[in-house]
Length: 444
Image (cartoon, rainbow, N blue to C red; front, side, top):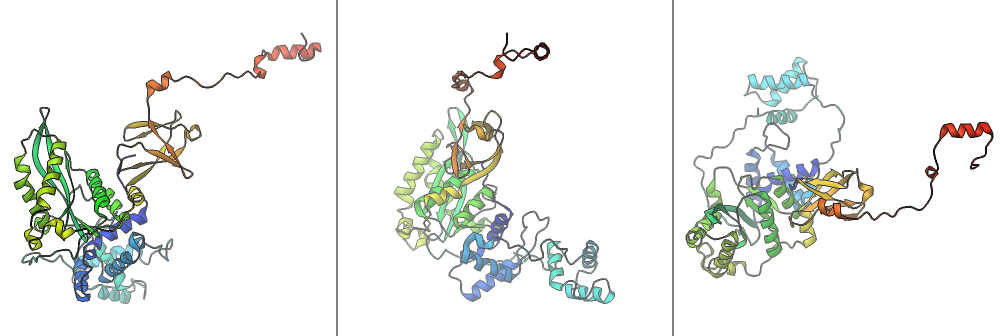
C-alpha cells in the first residue's frame, strides 16, 4: 500500500471533482447577487475533464449553482451523485443514432441541436420525443462538438483583489532556494509556505529537499493545527498540488481547492511578492553550508522578528501580525485531522503472518488472520509511525519484521503428554492376522 490519499469510492471522487469545479465561487462569500450570477456565467464557459472522461466539457449555470448551494448546505457529502432513476435501463439513443448525430454535427457545425432533432424526427430516423435537444447538446459538449469557444484572454483587465477576511483564502506554493553543501554533497533547497491572503501572514513554512505532495500535506496539517482551517486553499497547477491525496484531505476537512490558470503567474502575485522578499532579505545571505535544520530556524527567526512585525504596503501600514490578531479559522479537532489524513488499503496477510507495505515487511501476531485479506491503515500525519490493521472495530498493531530476532525466539509451545493412537505401531497386515487368529485388541 502506498501513502497516496485517494477517494474512498467513485461517489467521493465525483464529489471532489465537483468541489474543484465550483472552487472559484467559494471565496466570494461577499458577492452580491449580480456578481455571483456573472461569476456563474463565466465559470459555465470553462471546460473541465471529468474523472475517466476522454474529452473536456462545460457545465450549465443551473448545474454550477446547484452544486454551490449543495456544498454550502451539506459539505462534501452533499456533492456525491445520486443514483439515476433509470439505472440499469437502456438509454434513449442507440449507438447508430448517436454516431448519426455526431456525423451531422461535424458536417453541419452551424446547425442547432433543436434543428437537427426536428429534421431527424421528420425523416423518421428518430422517433417523436425519443430524445430532447438538451440531451443532444450535452452529447455534443461531451464530444467536443459544441459551438461555444473559449473566451480569448487578450486584453484581459486585471484588478486588485483581496479575500474579505482572515482565513477566507490561503495561498500555498514552493520556492527554489540555493543548493546546500552538506557533507560534500549538493542538496537542493525547497521552501514550502502557506500565506493568508487577507493578512499576508505566513501560516506555516518548511525547508525541505524535495517538493512532494506529502510535504505539502504535512504543511497544511501544521497550519490547520496552529490557525484553524481556511475556506479555500489557492494553489498552482503543479504536480505537487494536483494529486488525489491533497484533494481528498482538503475535501474531508471542508477546505475548497482552487487552482490558478496554467502559465498565469500574475494570478499568484501575493505569493510571488513574498518569495521576492524572502530571497532579498533571507535566502540571499545563506552561505550554502547550512543544513535543512539551520535554514528552518533562520526562516522562523526572520518571520518572527522581521516579516510579521514590519509594516506591509498592502495592509495600509499594518504588519501581518497586527492584521491577523487573534483571528482563528474553522476549528478542526485532532481526531478529524487524523482521519482526514488516514490512508486505508486492502492487503493479504501471508501464511507467515507478514504483510508488505511500501516495500517494507510488517508482521501481525494474530494467527487467525494469516492468509486472509485485511484492511491496513496508516496515518500521513505521522509518517514514521507503524501502520495497523482494522478488524471488527479493533486496532491490531503491525511491527517491522526482525528475522534475526524471530530466529532466536524460543518456541513457547509445550510438548503434549497426552497419548494418541499413533503411539502404538500401525500395522494393517498384523491387525488382519490377529483377527484371523481370534486375538483380542491388546493381547500379546
